Length: 417
Image: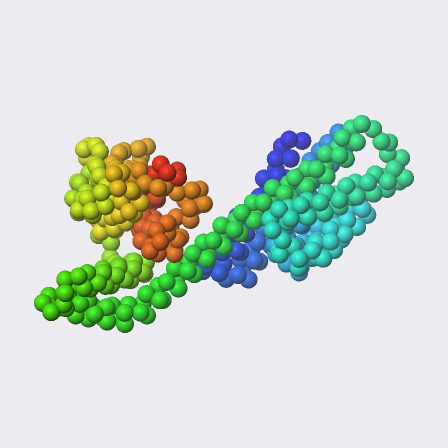
């Protein structure tokens, strides 16, 4: 019994892999009709496997999880594929024959009709209501099927009720509902993840279009305005107490140019120069570059560990990743705090640590890190950190962050050794 139960439970997970191609077809080279056809074929195969390897119980009773792929077909493929799957179920059940054929065909039609009616409203529901509705429906249908089957067999062949049948008839609807809850939960998680990826991709595409269209038109006037302001700063007839306003204007122009550079870093395609990089020396160099900025903010910048650590990658990209994170750490740290840099060898990995004693972040803020236009700074755009995440991925690495409000943040930039 256990072997067949495992086969049924595992095989119904196969369409989840195929479903990723369907949901992600908009972002891939696979055309949606073709991917949807593949999904339906796989789902039909799952249905046949479930019926071919039923779960044997005592006294010659057999059950399977056929209603799970049937439900998924109606709710996630559409009405026509669902009807075709229901038709396949009926034809194969007639082919198998045996007791309960009439009730099996009747409830296959009933299941199809119920989920046909639910198709339009189902996808408007939040995930919890989806789970409650689909499990309640499937539990009710399965239980009704078993009751009618028992009544039919009782009058047709004089089947007697006993404790074993009672246990089986109670367990099977629960098993069916539990299986569909597990599958729907996984499907919705996949849909949510892929939708987030699609939204981020579309947002990045929009940012790229914006950067490409306004870069030259904005940068040139800003450069001209900055040049004239620098000239006015040297004029003797302008009072010294008024020149501070010119300084502030120049600083704001520089900040605007920095934001434009952040936009460009998301879309420009520089040729990567792959080489062996000494992380310890690179951190030491960046410490020297960022030290004046840290000193201005009243933050102590410290490098721990002098053991040489190496990675293979692009030096320009790695410098930009580290500078973005170090700069953010310094800006997030109040005067008197500190930022610590270090690198170490892990389990077939090189880990670069950047820790600060700053204001820290909550769980929701941590979850949003790396998203465009999200920043904990009032004047930030979030594009610098987003570019860092992207460049780390291009170097087969990743960025992880942990934080606690009031105690600081710890970034780990991890690359394969």
